[in-house]
Length: 255
Image (tube, rainbow, N blue to C red; front, top):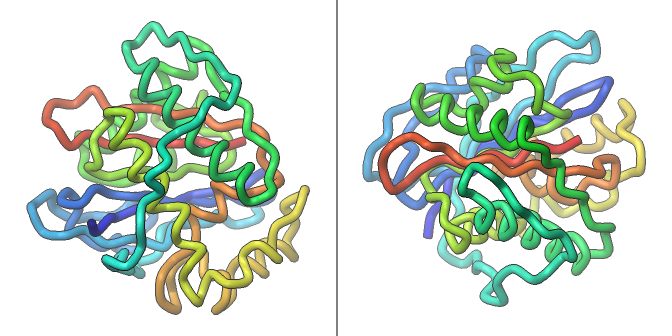
């Protein structure tokens, strides 16, 4: 199954974006103008965008135009999500999807030696991330709401986005697994060595090399894996589009 993802992320000094799309939803490369990317929704197999990082001066991030296709050799973890000890009780109807989202992220993190993320959730945060996913899908523009501060309350410091995977628990898990499997690419081989408990300029520089290619400028991008595996984030929020259709988008925001 091919997948398209986009990643944004960062902290006080810098932000990263990453997105992931469904097997048949996204067919447009980002235009590099910082508007979250262009492209039409169609039935062609999507690819992955390398994501975005902001400048240290706090100016808005821009997305690069690089893409990479998730090849058929990458497998999705068949183990499914496991209980992370977090109980989700969302009033927006996405409790099961949100539970699967945080459980799967933490399953992958702990299996790779990282501490679990806390779920960043209040009714206001849930509404905000749902609105971001809905806005992006409606505008067919990844990270659009995040970049342009349309719903800034839940921005945090980083974002991954699933484009067209759908919003059922199993579909959410499939997207997260595809994002995590970026680590298997040769140009993501040094990403773990670039990790740190603090995001410094040195770490950012390390994450923008040929062997930890956050943007996908030298092949397959690594931004989603970087955001999901970061030691400098402690919380993750999961949001889901309420737009019509059966290939809705989903976002994961980190802080």
